[in-house]
Every structure is written in structure tokens, then in C-alpha cells.
Image 1: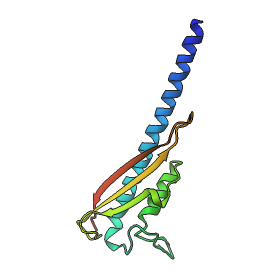
Image 2: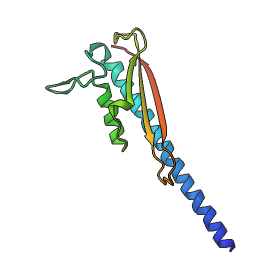
Image 3: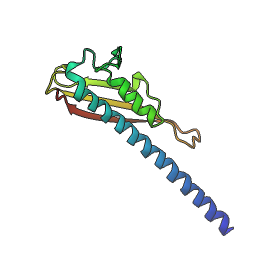
Image 4: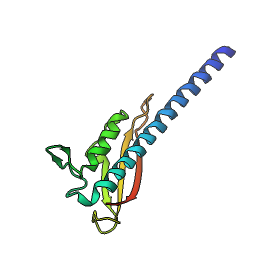
Length: 133
């Protein structure tokens, strides 16, 4: 009887730790994706015609492809991000000139690993940077 009580509590503790680890990993991946988008916008923002759109050129993605950068980072961390979950905002008058601030926001509906019919939780991450070039 004592063994049954101990094993049940240990299994619940193990599943809880695994679930919390996956939640923190997802948050860290989203934060990294937002930072990667800001990093890309900071370096390429002033020369971008459409900073949030897919401006593909003959040599690959163009300088304004911030959303694709964020999606690629999310895919590398095993999170499928859609265009609806990513927003790129220029906080200083909607210009992408040097000195302007850019904000990348990423949200993701996190579904618990051990569902148990729990509702999904939306995890959000934001990053802000100043365009340098």
C-alpha cells in the first residue's frame, strides 16, 4: 500500500516536471525566434522595401524577410509558426530608417504534452531593437 502511494506521487511528479520543462523550452524557443527577427530587422531594416513580407530575390530571401527568419528559427526548434502568430511593428512612426525601433512579437498555442483535455495556453514573446543601418 505504501509503495502504491509513493509510486503514484513519483509518477505525477515526473510528469509534472516533464510538462514544465516542455513549457519552458517552448517559451525559450519563442523568445529566441523574436530576438532573431529583431536581429535581422536591425541589420537589414533600413534597406528593406517591405520588412515583414517575403521579399525573395534571385539569391534567396531578401533583406525584408523578417517573418521568414522567425519562422525558420521556430522550425529549427520544432515549433511550427504561422504568419498569424508573428507581427513586426516599427514603433517610431512606422519607418524602417536608422535609429527607429522595431518590435517583433511571436505567439504560439501551447498544447500540453499530457493533454488530459486541458485547454491550450497561448505563449507570447516580444523583442525590441533599434535599427542600426
